[in-house]
Length: 117
Ligand code: 5GP
Image 1 (cartoon, protein in one colour):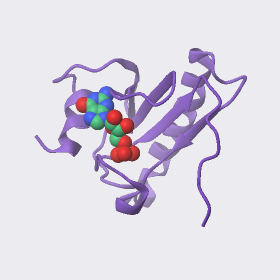
Image 2 (spheres, rainbow, N blue to C red):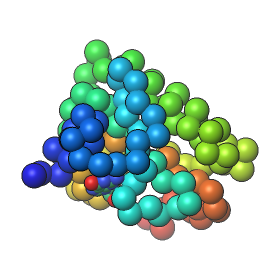
Image 3 (cartoon, rainbow, N blue to C red):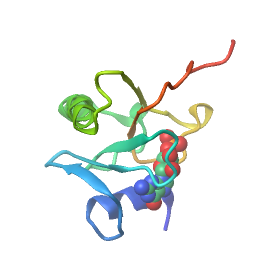
């Protein structure tokens, strides 16, 4: 099974995952290798490999991903102190799974995002 297929199988509940939200456009589930007390992946139900492959017609999906992130952050109790959203796009960003996803991270101070240039 290729990595991008893994998220499709989670979305269709063919393999187990801790799904915290699902609607007609997106699914959110806890990352299997969490890097913060809250680490949730928000994924379009439609397979879009990377942010670079997003089309004009996908605008509503991107908006939904962001809105769902804010709702989950509130529900997880991390909204007040703050959280981080990350979308890795392709190799230089370290994207491992080629099914577009947004990381929602929070629950502790996350430090600075990047090193020096
Ligand atoms: P990327 O590096 O592509 O932005 O992040 C991919 C994320 O998917 C990683 O944080 C990794 O831990 C997570 N991941 C990979 N396979 C699985 C899986 O089968 N289940 C869950 N819940 N998360 C996964």
